[in-house]
Image: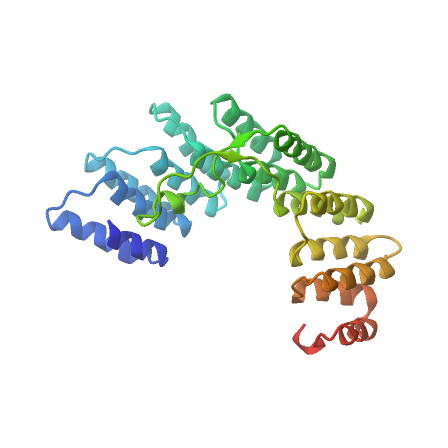
Length: 302
């Protein structure tokens, strides 16, 4: 199992599969962990055919599947961009009497987010709560992201507000590090204990992005001000979102963009190409280069 895990972590699904096959030909009975770890490798590649073959082989060998096994199947279809298939395997798990866990719901919510399926994301989050699980920030962030992808800024912010309220009420949640990767880590410590729910930088950035694409810079500023009030500083991604809001405003908010960039740099924030690219579109190449030079930044690197 440890050798299989090594190849899975290296992203080498074929080698992991060969080691699993070698166990069988060598007379060693693979366990649920053995099969499921290889399934996870196929899932990470979005190889649904290989994942289905693996599950079929698992059943043929008389090895019982568990919630993590089905979570891998959900992830495989999610990586392939097939939300219907992901939901099919989630429902199949339930129909076989296997109780979903936090990882199962988290993986499915991530698939909904990537597909921009806000209604389904909300429905599955409510189902998770109804099943007695405490959603963590990752779960809430997926719902926020799903709403943002539809351009429904107020809807995305409403979930951010719910997350903030739950955090302020001292709600506990499942560990944010819960994932398929941590489940399959043979060197990881024991399960992390529940902890207090807290919004993350991604929570605010995803919600702000929905306003940014509409050029609603005042709302973006408001959300990031709330974020910083919680002690969460901006990063290069949130800076890019803020600058993109200024870029899409009519008229463009050139002075605000320049001021925000200066402030971010003064706070020691990492300057990368994406925010500089947006800034150049707002200020123009000449003015942007002058600003970068004034800040001691090499325009050629950006």
